[in-house]
Image 1: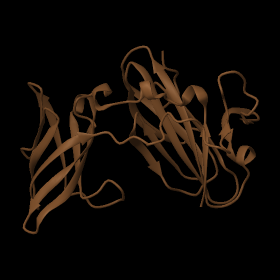
Image 2: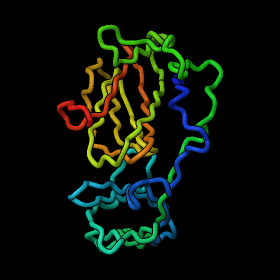
Image 3: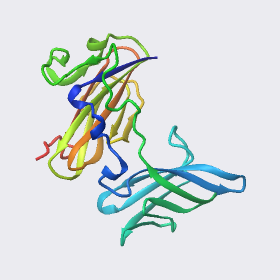
Image 4: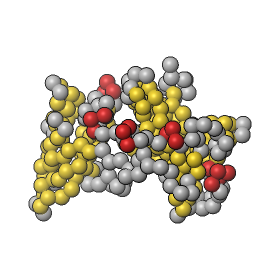
Length: 250
């Protein structure tokens, strides 16, 4: 598989802007890792905690975050007096997620895994689509200028991957928005270091076909798209709207 990096100077975060746990706007949402005490000894356990707005929180307890797998449990909960408590009695307090699953008692801590090359200079051979001065390298999509034509920018061919990065500035917290993505072929999206969408598919592009509920925090938000190429065309498009009808954010 060939790997391409499409980097924009304004979109690469310098070391001073790299995100930490303390920068995250929600004290509970994110990835957790730790151990569960089983009859065979300590084993690794992970969790994804998601906020559903007024509907509270959901925790997916998993044996790994690296591949699709059946969860140990999926539980819902809410915050009372600064503690996120789930329906099974498990809870998150002061950054520690503790409770029990069928395998045994567990304890996990939240972590933020960032790319070791985040904020680095573009590597030799990378195509810089926008360096903050001109758009000479930006291959617009003809009648659809919101598309990035990866095949034209990088050349076609099977089994390739490209990454598109962007930074979105929000003047205030935006608790509800929609990330709309089109891709040819598959696409995976990270927002502020968290996976928000994964569609490993083979398809022609249809702009803004995939719609994902997201939230933005005040200040800069980092968006990263991984776009895979099988055969045929290789394009991508994305926008953030107020709703699934494409209404612009105010």
